[in-house]
Figure 1 (tube, rainbow, N blue to C red):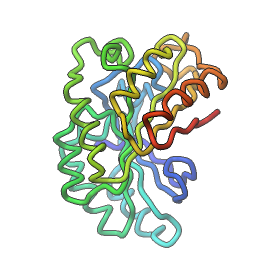
Figure 2 (cartoon, rainbow, N blue to C red):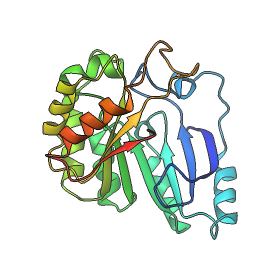
Figure 3 (cartoon, rainbow, N blue to C red):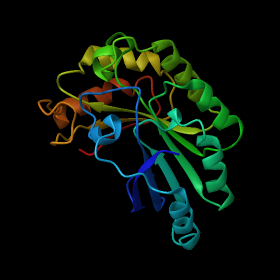
Figure 4 (cartoon, one colour):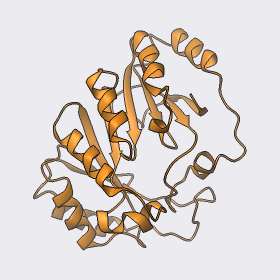
Length: 229
């Protein structure tokens, strides 16, 4: 596993659970607003030995509830199922953060009961995916396939979008609402720019506008939340 970051205790990455968050390196997207650009681009990183990770998890079994695997994009790692299986053997709940570009891996993890919760990023309306995720030839059919897998309620999940002024409009929100119609949970996340972003010129969407978007979405999605506002 290409794990290059580890937050030993997080209270924000997995609602209501004390969590150890692991960051994988490498991504098939290059979202301009990504705040983990070093992980995406593989710059100035030191790989963390999995022996160290499992030693830590064993020692903290009675203090931690869950492990969140994020990135980068975790599903690029072919050995992800085996790694998660080892985490599950220790009794941990597992959350996966993903961009949804690998529905085959996602479905495999779900069918084998290796993930308890999936948070999938919806970058934008499918029409605007290329510019929003920074990849011209992104296969949006795979994104749609991952969405449909989660909408089947085979695992507990949420969809989420990081709102960026340069990328997201009211029409995009309406298009997304059709894409994930009937979803149980959708989070609109505040963009926080910093020097680690791929594009440092981007701006957040203000809270009032975000709330307007949320109100629009509530007509077709069960629960819509603002996160970070």
